Image 1 (cartoon, one colour):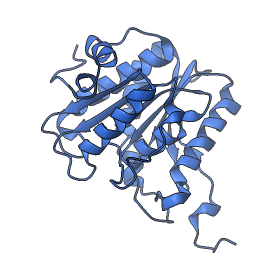
Image 2: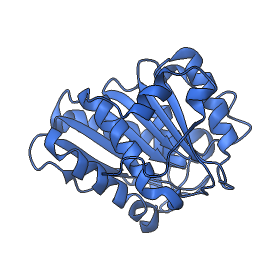
Image 3: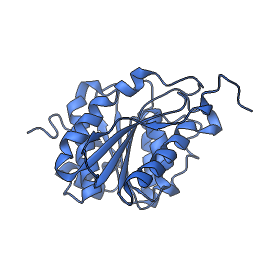
Length: 247
């Protein structure tokens, strides 16, 4: 029996839609950060932190009728084996199918949300995953599931100076995924720390390029195409160029 203070009695929700006001032809689900443990409500700050990315995706995907939602978790924590944000992401994917039918979906996660996006990618609606500075506890990276990523296009992005989520762990995970799935690449943002604030415009442009390319079969930008085609380690340590996506 759940206690009155257990946030799991709440329901996850899809935040207000960004992008197309009609029927979307593809959907991007953005999964915010969180905490290792916690049954309290997610903070507004975690949702606000990904709002700019959601708006960027909606703006760049307007001509393709891209719908964008930020998933609101039931609780703020991962909570060990409960993996609460994975359950919420799976619910959100089912909800997208219920609302919009058989549309392709891209999962975009940040920090804890990135790990949830990778885990939830086995849903049949998912065609691609973007994991930004994924939170991967060191003791779990060797056993983190990867089979569910088969058949999906996968992008990982990490700042080389990140002191909160270890970029070497995301590289090790990318190596494991690449062995089972050729459609994997990873970009390194040199000298950037957690939050990727030093190269925010480039990271958002990279994410949008990958999401729109995978959902709508657009041509990827040359660096993304090269990274997907390159063998490890090159394709998994691709530097994100200053000015990427600039017009």
